[in-house]
Image (cartoon, rainbow, N blue to C red; front, side, top):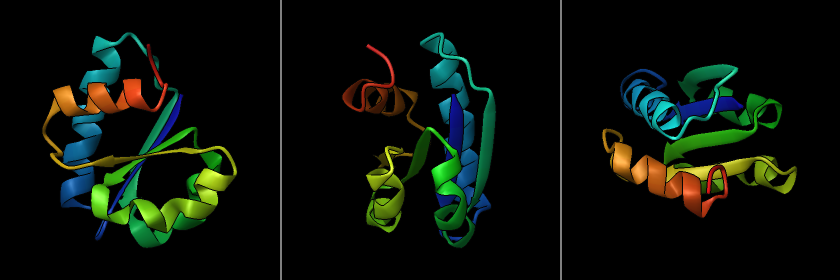
Length: 96
């Protein structure tokens, strides 16, 4: 699975979400083939090349074009909550 993690500046929050996503995917036995974290400005332009985008909940609408192309866009409230990431993975049918 190709995963994009994007936040406002592409440094703090996206890195925290990335680490949490990696733990959650490992716990759910889902293989990540590529993971990239960046700022929203970069993420919007490359999102279509990924299977799923994780971003803070308030930025989800910025990825509407990617979602229209079939990319799953997942909003996250707590970047350090593995439980939340795992719940979102189930909600968005990334895992069962």
